[in-house]
Length: 109
Image (cartoon, rainbow, N blue to C red; front, side):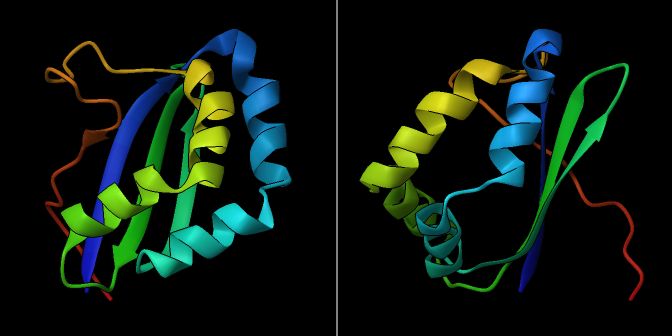
């Protein structure tokens, strides 16, 4: 199991829309997340900076392959067409990077 964490900025005018989408997440999206070996997935919002932090446990063997499979799912692509316009990459994001990965520096069970 790997713990993963990512960060992105949320557009201030999109906060209510983004919260509503996630309060009513589509069953197919939740099923796809689980099918791609993601467990205990949480997204946190830090205001007033409007930072989203996504944290999850990955229980598979090939994270890149599972993320590619998720990206190929038609329902996921429809979901991202709604959520992506709410977000904007961090200023420090690398080329082609959307959600920026975070380095784990401490964990305690």
